[in-house]
Image (spheres, rainbow, N blue to C red):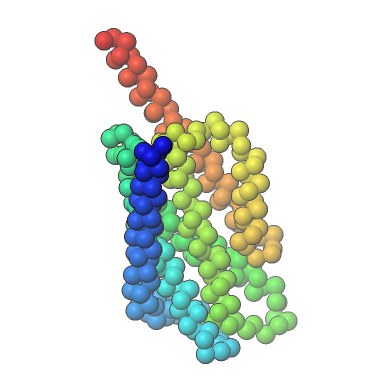
Length: 247
């Protein structure tokens, strides 16, 4: 009983250590991002066809904090993934360690791709559509805070959602899930993804469609990648069994 309690305490201590390292990494990245936040802000607004307004002296500070937070989160993704890998590493075989650590760069790349998809494709389409609804009947007036909140909602969620294939592959490698379970629960996953898309997009049909389709494609690609990993694991097990039987 004492041994179990000691192991449990050690697990919690290890988890606390990994969380603290991740938080410190985020805070350092946030400070560094704040140093260059004005340059990043000018890059984001330089091609806007309209001027942004401030309603209060604290608005620009809030906007700078939003921009710096996104940069810090992006920089912290590989650190957090590596810390998570270090936490589960003792429970993995040497081969599983080599395979799963390869997913860390994929998490970072897919996060960047998700944000890029939101910023370069989805955000301009939705913004232009919403602006076209005014049809010269209203005076367009954008506050800096509202504009960047809208931009944040159109980009950051996709950074996390685009990581779904790598997360699915990682969990499949650990034997936590398999592609057949994903297929069986497809309708529930579709419902959840549709709910998420409605939650993170403006209340219009076009935005929902533009978000739902990529999310469903991501889920289907995740199933395919999970099948690839699962079948490779099964082949490895069969080869090991054949070697044991021949011995």
